Image (tube, rainbow, N blue to C red; front, side):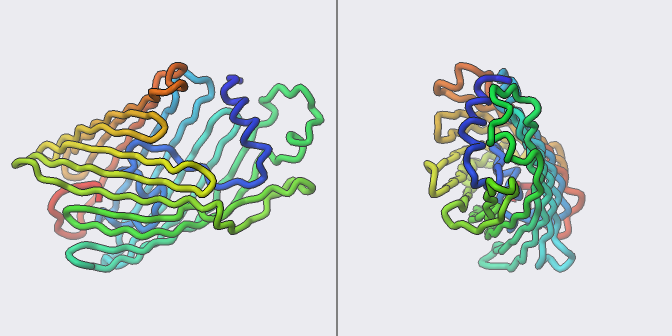
Length: 305
């Protein structure tokens, strides 16, 4: 196994407290349901998205992500329902999760305010037999289970209108502590392990058929440095989106999005690390496709929110 991932495992697995592994996504505007349950129903129609991310190309056993999200409002428009299926993996570690989302939506100041809650479970798997252990009797290898199914839940709020959007969420709030004696996880609610997400963006008209959309996603965990994603996209005739962005920790990215018709959208992004890690990989690729089956109400344009 690549030495890089052995270093990751050395630091990760001696720690007894685990939270949900979050998908690193360049296109958070097209992946909002993954971290904010209040986003469910925001497309005002049945919406299906698939996302694939191949990170750090060139590293053996590098992280990869697969996400399927489905969400829709009910007929009265007051309630949004969503389903999220995720598969994350790197090295010998993988997670498979399923999450259901519920959002209550109210009209407020020419926009829609949603309050959401999400419930789900994640199956964590560690293929210990793929490691070449120097000490096969190492207690860290004996006591850590190969597979565990762990419950979790999320909270969030989301507001949007035709000009801007704003969201706040605390996804995957529960922590899971491994008991050394039994080798089983114990569920905990630890405020110091919460992850806080803030998302926002604003449409700016530059000229007829040309708009600018600056946006940001801020992530905060009490035990880690804050992370900030800042993007800006130029929109041409509501068909073609060209963008660039910066993520704290020295990551630059470029984005291309095409609205093929009123219902089908496809997007691609490429990001690369400008720091020391970037010397050893060929960047990261991300592809998203979204299909809106039918509009349940009249909308101005097929935007992300």
